[in-house]
Length: 371
Picture 1 (cartoon, rainbow, N blue to C red):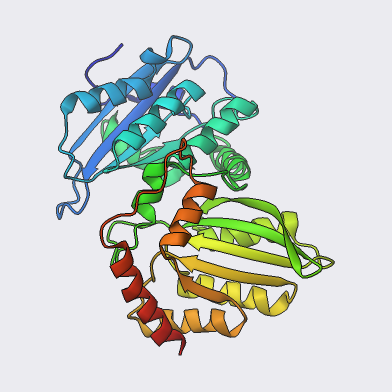
Picture 2 (picture 1 turned 90 degrees about the vertical axis):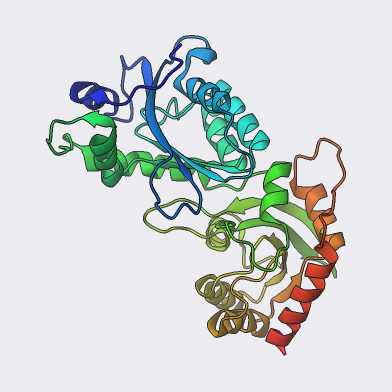
């Protein structure tokens, strides 16, 4: 097991191990290039970079991901600073490593992790597909390396001797296939989120700096004879997609329209969101409601997104005008969301200091906007 990271790899090593052929035999090592940055560091320079190599067919403790976690935890970085970690990996993590990564993220709420992978490891196997979904549930971003990221790795992690990165035959086709496959795996909603994710992203701060994602918990009920029957529920979050940058609201609409919606049924849809919709998403949701009279939408939001800006206020008004009910989450709503959408292990929701005070402030602002 490599205890200390390498600085760079040789050109042939990079080309052999990072080739993005979807099905590739004989690559028994996972290479992990990492960057650790301090959030809000004005220099924007990495705090540390390096490379770990792990053997995929050996015990999990010898995998590259475990080498990194051991190294990171051994450095005892300060908990009062926020760190952004990026991995560029030749293979996505195995299920065992995913479990350890999920534990690591739960124990380090000051850390965000982005994983850019050259290839998907056993993407046709159910356990490995579930592992990718678990990474997303744990709060990690997972994506396929594109040409810019390959060039970035070449420049920063390879003894390139001044030579530029040269893509191989079928590079673009391979990327398109893997990108589509990952999107397919992650397109369905998650079942729930972890407690640390909920407490971080749903805390109802007036201005929540560093909360750059929207998490959307939904419940879909079918309306029958003036009563509702619970049918579907789950969780969406913003997808890291270089083509669409799909917001959680768009993820829901895409899934709902393609997999669920029927003109012969009436629906009651309830959202619990960490942020109110942005201007573009508010417009799309309003347009959807205008053309689907059989869908009723209620939005409970923890926070208001740019509520002091006129165009964002107009977006909220457009939702209300098209029949959506928009409300600020109160204590009961947080408690309900916790019970339905969090892996709580039987533990009750613990309100944070200032929850009621912030609710009153945000509720007052929303009423002013919607008047």
